Length: 163
Image (cartoon, rainbow, N blue to C red; front, side):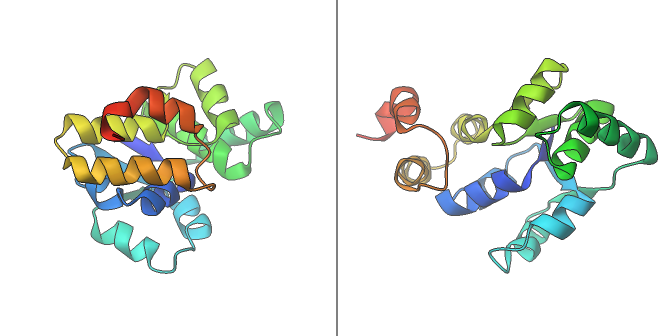
C-alpha cells in the first residue's frame, strides 16, 4: 500500500511519539514535493528525520496540477496544498492520510481511500509495535490539544491500552 501523507499527520506522529514506528511499517510512505518543501518546517529537524526514515518525495505532474486547480475552484475551503494532495492521490490511486476534515470529506466523496491518524495507530498495532509505544501515543492524543481527535473516540476504541 502506498500512503500519501499530509503534513499534519507527520506533525501528529511526532507529537505522539510514533513517527519512527509508522515509518518502519512495510507500507511505502510518501508526500508531495511542494508540501514537503513549504510546509514541513517545525520542528526544525523533522524534514531530515523523515528523509532518513525513508520518506519518499513525489512530484505532482502537470495533469495533477491541472486537477488540483480544478478542485480548488470547486472546494474553496481546501488550501492549494490540500488540492495537490487530493490530485496526486486521485491520479495515482494512493491512499491519502490526513487529519484535515474537509480534505478527508472531499477525497472520500471522490472515491479516494482516505484515512487519518487512528488508521496509522491500527496499522502499528497490527504490525506488532510495542504496546508501551501505543499506550504512550494514545495518552498523548488525549492530552495534547494540538491533536484534534475527541478523547472519547480514543477511549472507546483503545480502552484496553489506556488502563
